[in-house]
Amino acid sequence: MLEATFASCVAEPIARVVLVTAPAGVGKSRLRFELLRRLARTREAEPIAMWLGSGDPMRAGSPYELIASAVRRTLGVVEGEPAALRRQKLRARLKRGFADAELTRMVEFLGELTGVPPEGDEERAAPRRAAGSHPHGRSDPPRLGGFPGRRVPPSAPC
Image (cartoon, rainbow, N blue to C red; front, side, top):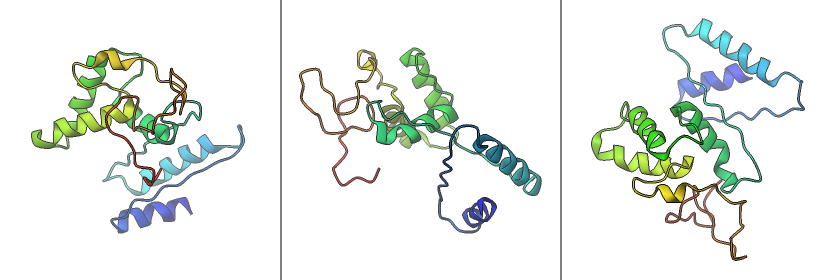
């Protein structure tokens, strides 16, 4: 089933997501390893990239944490590094696929998603609060990342 899903993604211009859940120790990591090994053997001419993410339901912006962690891992952005270094890593990796006109916009967007503040806003890089919490007891509308500005409409898919 996993190989067939992958084949359909290659054959059709449609993205697919596969979610594998099971208790610890059942073999989820082994399944991923074996799938990648088999696909690599059959597709030697075209390398395969697998983006891995993990979520934390207690983290602010948790609906987006799964994709945010996958983007951070793939782009080499490590939480806890200085904001300027994380922004530099984002820009360097994104420069491979985006022209200058789109690059700044993509760095800003993915920076917001992954917790990298815009240039000059390093003070906003403080740790995020739990989802929905506010220092004065108010509940703010959800945001993509931990920074004010772009708000997610209530009807946005998560």
